[in-house]
Length: 236
Length: 236
DNA sequence: CGGTGGGTTGAATGAAGTCAATTGTGGTGG
DNA sequence: CCACCACAATTGACTTCATTCAACCCACCG
Picture 1 (cartoon, chains in turn red, brown, yellow, purple):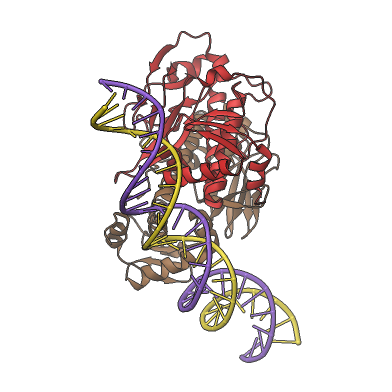
Picture 2 (picture 1 turned 120 degrees about the horizontal axis):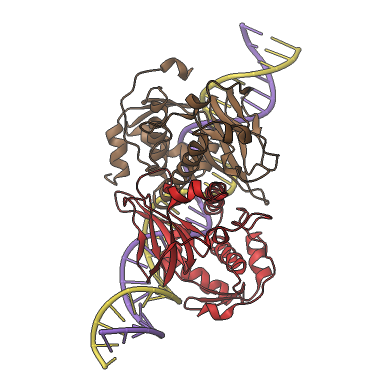
């Protein structure tokens, strides 16, 4: 659906400060690094788990297609989505030093992941260890940026930050920066942003009423990017 | 001061799920690994920066003594403390793949850090790369646990979670688990927990009024650990 | 078609924030 | 030694933003 909106894209400034992922100058993407290996591929359908917390960790998973979420569940049932993941992201790195997975990874729609046998690749593929370290550090910076955002921004600013960040990520992947298709429910979005789903809905409605975005169910068009940035700057 | 309260300690259950740091079975601590190297040591005084965001990253820093905070500052001046660090923690790992530091690291009181020349140690010291990876993954899990806590808990529960988590950490280091000396101001604590400093004060006062803790400025005694855990479970 | 899950909207409530005044503490210099 | 100052912490009164609870709508699918 959204795949039909592929466009050539100019770089956009992300409101978050985690400095993108991969693709630094001279640093080959993980996908390029692994392309020629005979990796097992696994197809997933919506709501299907790539893995669950507690399961033995055999592989890392490189997302080749589709959108995923990773989430944490506490013993008393509280859940928190720790991130939405897409093509080029690695699933499972957070437990790289453990025998079992530390979170759930769930497909938001159909998708494909490549199974990476860590031990074999780690000392057989030059450059992999370095990339892995970078992925881990990158995740930390991304998490910190979101901590900063969730701890200091209003509901409206959080939603706007999310939209602009998603826009920038999709653009990096070659998608349109202004026509977003949310793969997650309002509840998931609220969970990630530490807001109630009703609050998410209300904010989206208000942004639309102010002419900043167009919302049709999960399809969002960014109508006034400057206006959105102005909201972040506190210029009401 | 608190150093005089050294005691032998029994393991305690942490309310957070980031599975401790280091010290897994058979896994030597970073300090043990680096003890014999001729590392440059650096002493710091309260409020002194180990490094600042944007500075060239020459070393990693292993905390040998003292307490530190790491923090992020956005372009528009919003600040967020990403963690309080203590003996055995590594400072600077979040930018391990970057030429410049991505956060500020500040001493909360006098302290000592060991400068680790990453490049040299990385391929000269067997086991270091593995430990580094574990440290990074550990930080991610810790961050996620706090995201979960901040996103789902009330002010009171956040403060209690912090106290119990700090207690567990200090115990691991050989300090008393029930007599805590907070090294940070109420403002810092509030910042980390995404609360206002007044709220932190109020919560501490209320916990004291209910006989769960004793508060004297920055010295806190845990008087009723079971009662604190009950608050987390929602049993008012 | 009827049902089910996701989404929207309204009204009332409440937990934490804001603003402000006061107290306590530790350091400094007269 | 004491007076003073700057800063940290506490407490109170009031406000507000987001939550809660509820009703309703709508699209999709068996």
